[in-house]
Image: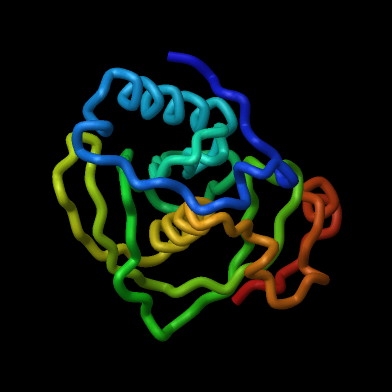
Length: 179
């Protein structure tokens, strides 16, 4: 496995919609290695999710895992989830605003509104169809990563740009803007 270079805001790979993969492509050694490398990269940078464009691959692939994490100490555990060709079918009408950051925009955070629950369909690591509902922090992370697959970065979702701030400054001068 390898730790991959993370694309930062401004790189064109983060702005274009990604390509779906066939089941045959998903099962190749090359794609499976990419999955393993993305998981290792996500862990190395203490992320809770990573989309393929963030590691310079324009593929419709994301990984999510939430375990005790210094960046998000207050959230629960989400098992390792690998999804290809993700499509969100439904968003709850209820939304919640909360802080988000991104490995592709290091050091910055902002308050982003997201649906509190979603329903999605995708292919898993073995190319099998899956569909499920997610809520809370898991739903937030999935929406953030699917945005990456569509060429959208979290600052575009911020309603009040005055909440966009460096993490270091937020630690020095805490704000409680999120609901």
